[in-house]
View 1 (tube, rainbow, N blue to C red):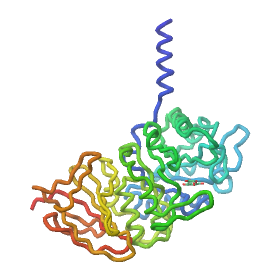
View 2: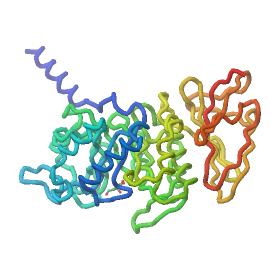
View 3: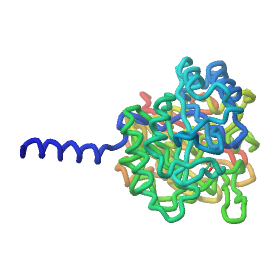
Length: 403
Ligand code: GLA
């Protein structure tokens, strides 16, 4: 009798301590999300077009695999059983058949909901329906849940997100859990055990360095987001990532700005979730998003978030230690004027004191490869010289060289 009681207690405690699926998101998730371009104007036709573009334009080959429907996929009311219903006009064949189509192309299906009573767009939220909704997602073959933070009154964020995480775990279907709490309660300090990525700021806006006010809240340009949360890189690593928001590459900034934005997201080991209309992507935008050398910096197996080494006269130097003692460096010109770079390796030691890596220049020579131009520039025997345009970057990879 006693033994049965102990076994039961052990079972209950193991269930109540069930955590997220640890095998997912070992490198930052890559994919596409509907919000930045389409807001709630989404449909089955759009998603099928996105799936086809993933395959046709090499996005799938470059590593993008999650296709995430953001806010606006639901009908305004739950049904009589309290279940969520896909909007019958936008998704006339429901979501299971769409999910099957996504899976048939070797891609994964993501969906959105919110910890509040209603989503930010006013659709039914998951509060009080967490387990019911998670089971529904599992039945549709969902692989990724983005979980927002509107209309949450004064509920406790850690508790609310933990409840949803447990609801996902209880379905036994592996799902990446993406927290979208905007950074208000520092989710990086509590979310590692329950989620795979957490938004660090409010919403992004397609500008290099602006704030756009919407009255009670603002959206933020690329550099505002980059500068908003310094000091949180220690919380990122394989399986749990700081998320500076979906990308705006291809959404109206200059080519240089798009390239800088993408480079910074990769240096920060950010999730690479595209936010443009990939069905109508230009060749030049595609060349940024599918640059395998740049993507490889983001996806490096060591999973260390890069950091800003220095900032002088509008020239920033970023570094990211990589596996096999390699490094990525990114020189960013934040000014509106062209700048000359003359970087002396010995005079500028690169040390990651947080994770205890340093770029050893005594006795080691590295080759320096320009990742956007796809050319070897020089070795670290000589200073690195370059001309960097306004709001542009030079992004390089350092590998041990034989000479
Ligand atoms: C919030 C999120 C966005 C998006 C919208 C949808 O603003 O931060 O990323 O999901 O809600 O309404």
